[in-house]
Length: 598
Image (cartoon, rainbow, N blue to C red; front, side, top):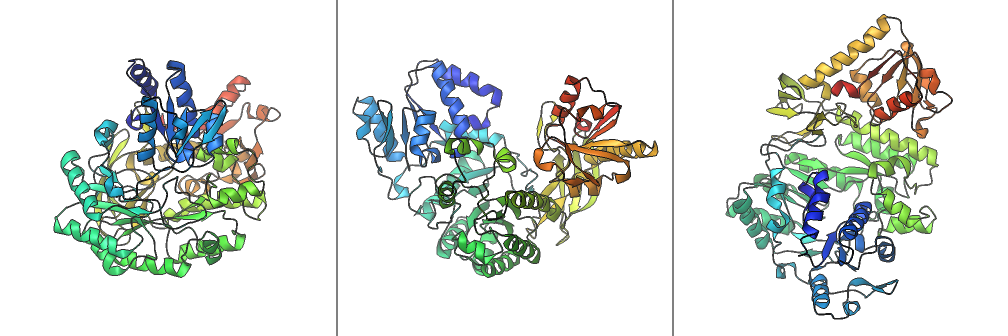
């Protein structure tokens, strides 16, 4: 059963129907630690339907904190590491009533005590393994969910590719960066490149896809392997697009040009920092000069760059952040966004955080990571020597910088027209090479049968687009999409009318991440703002629209009565409106950004 292409509401019904057939002997569940809460719910749901069915866990979640995982989730067994041989032996032992705790590589139970049986056997050569039976995993249904003409998201929109298919050419990674854990995959192992290309050719014939994402943590630790791959693609005349992850110290211009010629115009690199001190602390084994040199030749080869800057390594200081920001500007890495270093279980920095008392309850911490956005705003572990207040202020600033940076390279809209309520067609021009392309955009991207998902920053984030000619990213402002521009105009008219009527307003929330970019597109005169409120404690006393932010509570909520309330883009806008109703407080009127999309 593959839940990934099922509507959330259909999953429980399908699970119930399958288990009640009585034909299921055992359930295996695979996931990473960020699926901890979902796996917990799934196990409870399975046991509620059929209490005696054996449950086996696998995947990254079993490779770290095994005893905690067993005592909390309470599966019957857990397979640790690469599971092909271990899981097969466990199944045979269960089938033949053999003592399962004699199978190496698993967690099992001795009464109420979880027991780890020691390291199991993993495949020495990946080419010994058969290819996965993808039809069993309903892969065709997964492919059907993708757009046939282009890939569309706020983060990256491309019209030069169609439906994409993931393949694996290796496992693990030979490098040991402090923030990375290889999820029990063992040593770095590579598949024979001929077999990888055979697989690509087979999937072209079977599934009709012509775009391939090589999902390896590191496609190759040396240039020769990449060159061999490109030569085979050329020899077989395979007209595909492909994407991979590489290190910046293992590339040169001839290799990149060969990659471009065979269909690769986008590569993911681990950039992480523009400070050598931080890169050294992370054990990245690269320097800022290596990164700068690599950026130059990647652009010369007309290949796009995917990468991040990571904030919050133990060596991070205000000075290293400023150094990285300057490096980002110097290299024009405007679309390499800032993210926080997260101490995932199994990583050296997780051990650092535990040993230094920064993670007090490991279960609570692991559960907090299951909602990454919630963790980042409520539970972040500060591993630096900065104060928690400094740390949070920098994180919020860097998140806002992401959106500001995108606007440093905006696309030029040549023409555009509205096709339907939530769809426009636009012709845009690349600001780097002037190449024109035409897009049909259903926007916002997050929609259901009722239209846009309102409990989001709806209509605020623009679209990052890859130029198929020069492979540089450019940004299309949401306001410049014709049917979204109509909403911006409507909202601005409401704000202007308030000013013309000499009214004062209360504003909620005190924007952080989208403050600068939203107020570039919507003008709110500070003179009409009486007060600014928020529901988030960390925004207290932060200045927004010239006012120090107050946090909504029972003592100040009555001040909303009879006032004009302007609710800016906010995920929890309904919660604010609900509080007012519960307290029988009636504003003079409410102008709510999110509801303009209803």
